[in-house]
Length: 330
Image 1 (cartoon, rainbow, N blue to C red):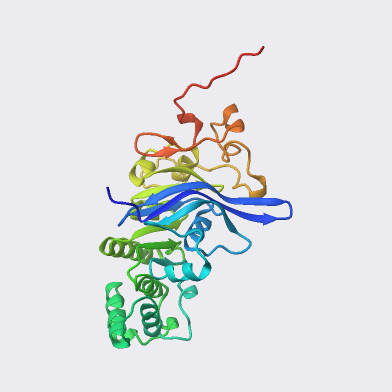
Image 2: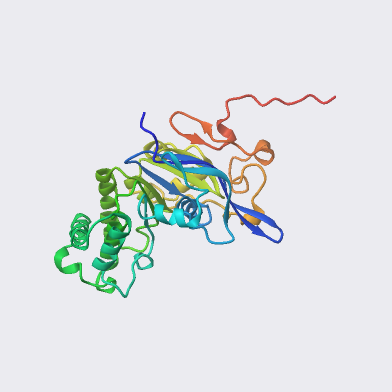
């Protein structure tokens, strides 16, 4: 069996406050295999980006990893000092963020930025690094790369800038790419191009991808598996086709019901009542119980684990096949 590139085990991220620690990511576990795209989806505040930031060691203080482990192949990386983690970022882990201007320095030509990134992580001469930069720009679909390599970021459209960021993320042939909302700021037609490009490049390079988004449409087009997050916890995880066609968690069902379809007979979409709970007000038991149409007594008392279904897992007591033992009153 091929070993996973990324293994996250029981990850817990906390933010210390005067009133105690707030848990932003709570007991999250998943693997990503070589060449696989894992989509991580959920509403704002679900803990998606926090999980990605924990993996790449970019948690904003005072946020901290309070429990669990993160493994990049055979190396544990969650306990590395900042300087060693900095060397892993860019060389073994590539990053693509929502706004490409956060990754590109507006004062430097994109060729200079690519060459600097390549030479930081690969022992190579300046001329060879420039040839590598040209090849990357061509690979991500930048037209006339020999000319555009000397342009500044402001001379590119949003979609073209995101292609440059993809080239930067692939500069050192990383094993893992974290893509956090990489298409949100782009037009729909450009989104489709970037999605197809990301998937093709990662297949060719054999990299694992953690694709963070709130858009189930992007997940359906790009991901092999999907992890649905709610209130810092995994609500459901499984093959994307299974989860989309037959969602088992009520939250996933609500997300799928909110997507308009051409075949819909009614003009109204399904609405999930309420809102994501604040970190200091996460309900006991199942975090989704205050918004769930199927809530019953056990949901209030016990937190459901990820229960195995056919090919996916869902954290919902509706799918518990074990009988509940009720002690008789004395």
